[in-house]
Length: 275
Image 1 (spheres, rainbow, N blue to C red):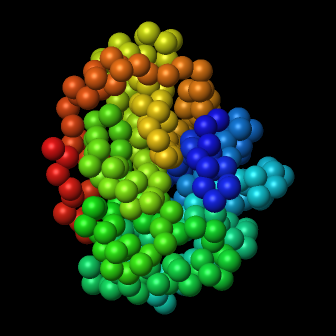
Image 2: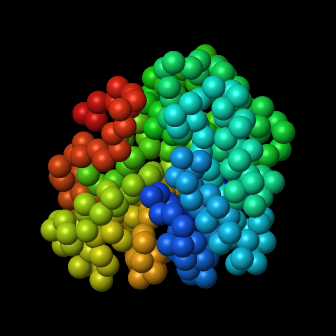
């Protein structure tokens, strides 16, 4: 496993994304992932699967301090009152008295960013989360959060994969002192049959998904949370630490079509140019 070192804490760079799994399926996949060695899990209040995630972690018997657990709030309403209410419910569902990372899921223009981030900071100060961060923030939104509202943010989680390459957004995230977290790193399955990624993978006896995951892991200060609904996929996704891509591989990946974004809610921000 590769780890991100932050404040003397080692955080697994590779985690498991749980959207849109629910119920028994989610429970089974999280339990299987724990058995395979995953120790980083990503959920959200809006996923309606926190109870399944929490139940699986509890039943595993693995000490809570050995797991890095992320949840998110503010998907539809980012007022301070709603964030506090959602987060309290999240802790109950997850069977824990704290999370490691709490993210403001999506920014909403009808609520002051200062109010939303202030609620997250209050939760951090209460000790119920170690870190706070943001999801799907553009460069301008990140700058506002940090330079205007003085937010102490750990990460910006945004969509990133070989078919959506955003080096400017990654660079600015790091310049502002944050870690990148890539969601949808296998492009929601769209890279599985990609001929170029198959070609690269054949060099190493790896699949296109493993190539896409390794591509992210090779980047500095970057975490990623691929999802799989099959035990064989979970095994494949974590079996990526025995090879590295070379410069020629990365050049080939840069030649792929770009800006194939999959996450497009009606309240999406004005995305940064990728050129």
